[in-house]
Amino acid sequence: MKKAAPHPNVRTVAENRRARHDYFIEGEIECGIVLLGSEVKSLRQGRANIAESYATVEGGELWLVNAHIPALPQARHFGHEERRRRKLLVHRRELAKLWQGIGREGMTLVPLRLYFNEKGIAKLLLGIARGKKKADKRETERRRDWAREKARLLRARG
Image 1 (tube, rainbow, N blue to C red):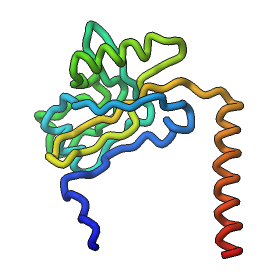
Image 2: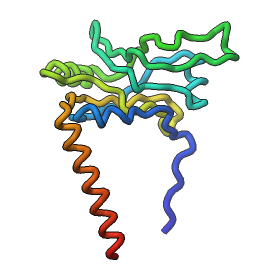
Image 3: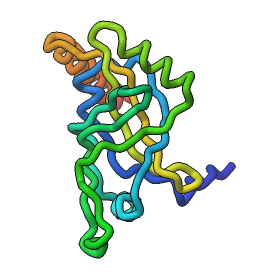
């Protein structure tokens, strides 16, 4: 049986790989993002960085802060500010859930992945996260190394 080909519109633009290293991800939520035309064009070229960004709830709205989407040289008249705050779109119930999640001690909203969905619409995957301490990071690394070593041993035997 043939495997279905991935949809041509689905494409990851930016991924925050450090997030899973620095945080315990308690839950995930997909949200829309309000963008300008030049920002969408820049994203379609695969140019974005969400590694240093975070999300916050202010005034009953969800905002993405410090995400870097570089300006296009062709869009110099109608360009955009590269690190501007961008509004995130979620349902009211989801916003209430996020507000409760970050209301707890040590919880934060961390962008995990910026991508285009099947319809070609830009989406952001947010994680409700709790920060890891140094010992937690070492334990995670120890487990990952052991899993890698175990797989290597099984391959050598098999």
